[in-house]
Length: 324
Image (cartoon, rainbow, N blue to C red; front, side):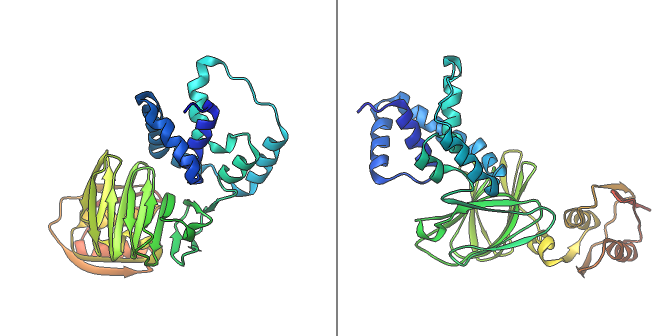
């Protein structure tokens, strides 16, 4: 079966955007199985989409501007000529950026932020989103999600995330719920958990239920309530974190049980973004404390830590310095 190359590219774009019909899928599979070259080409598209540009595309979505772009493309019937040396890269762009496919129906259904996709983002304020399946997502500052508008009518419920969010997932055994980031995949049925993926480091913290966390190499961990995992430097490992402290941005609560000064400082730097770095000019302390903070200012927290550890804490607006 010989199909025009541009049609195959359109089918791959439909496959990646989950808008492919059964008949189109049959044609695509037939082409893919014709020879190993086709198979490798298809795998390249999928791998590139999943591991790199696929999620970076979502960072650029501006739903309010998409319709203007679509109309502009629909009125421009001329297809620009592309020199043959750039043929391969134009093919990849056509699949990874389906919004540039110059066909009316294709544009409507595959332009991110328009048609089938919905998106939500935040700047300096948190936002709560209720999904069509009644699941709830609380987006932290400077974060973004994208999902299908017919979210509850698909076989699986998939969210793509850039940044940090807390998820309260409605239970539906027949429709697994997944969260994709640039680095990890989180699979759940019904539970509550936090996902933070920033600066190539991803963490998952479970506050209720159970989740499965997988990395690009298909390594995975099962986490239950109170457990967390971190993906850093290409490795997925279970983390020794207090999951309550991981969601300080949401609850404004910090809880420490037999914690060292070093452990407390790591949590403080995550909880208070104004702390850019921590400088230790003090001798190591063997003291461990049990305490908690609830909606307290950084000044109030370090005043209490001064009493517990007998150290001097100074903060200049960026650096927290600890000295004897």
